[in-house]
Image (cartoon, rainbow, N blue to C red; front, side, top):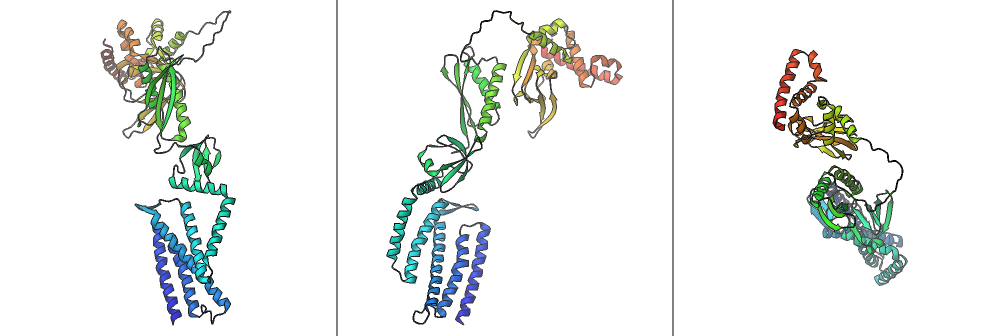
Length: 504
């Protein structure tokens, strides 16, 4: 009858702990491991122990040696399971905190495992003493001596383990952080009790022992925040005004992809050097993995911006060459410019002399890959002719997303309405690759329109003819009457806007 009650009690308790374990598994609770240990081992060994004593296997006077030792083994396993479950519950309650639905351990798992192992070993000594009747002093002494011998034999390994515990406890970095240890810089991909694995920019895996990390100075580029400062020193000519240089550099910084707007970039004059005035550019990036890519884009755009704004980056040395032969004639840049202007329909009415004069007033600007030439909505008073490279035309909608509408290549142009009427830019234009453009400003065309007022009428008719699908004004002669009327009406309105813009 008593054996039956033991069995029923074991079944009920096992069912209750099974339900509890499933609930803890659903919540990912850290106590689910100790509870499963109680359900699986403690309850079953307790049942075997009670049944053994009920059958008389624990009586040294009546039980055989085999039965007595078997029961002692079961009792030893039972007490070890109880100690392991109790240690697990105690350490989890002492070191685990709850944040919302998540549980976080405040102490590294490696340290907890070592503490649990020590407590279980010490408990095992007392269990052996109580169940088998041995003196625990000898066991504890043997355990201590063995620990000393093992520690001397594994000194370097234990050094790595202890430093690893300190690193895991202090958490100076996490997996995914970019760190520098000595001469090694890379991303942390794994941390364990012996070493830290770092993947460098060359995609090599470097294994750094924890003992080395404990001795070297460690720099974490991802902490305390992801923002990381980059600093560049760039020299410009003494003839370039410092405030202008700073404005140009700040524009380059803000247009470089990957640079944070906050913290605010800073540009300072730091030195009057032998060949240049040196400026320090300091900005912050969030994605350290793209550090080299962002720096490359910034330094590349500095050159293009300097050329566009007529700033000089002086050479650090000067080399002189003496040549006694006949010098080659330089190409006539103005002829090339005039030829490019002649291909633009808006300038078809201009005489050769007028094209030549206009070519002297134009400006050539170069843009690097990815640089924005004009922004939608910005005021404009100039048009651009593509000399080399490709540009993409995009429109920004109400949601802030951009949609490509056209691509421009050599000989094509944009911005004629801004040149003639001063209208804001109706689209974004971005350099797909290195882009060279010819820029015609309002000031270059203004004197011609004042000298020849009829020129404005001809330009207005050309613009409206192209807008309505006619290749040239002469096509109006064969166009339907309604289209001719539409062109004349629209050209008249455009002419009025041109005259107001140029003060004609």
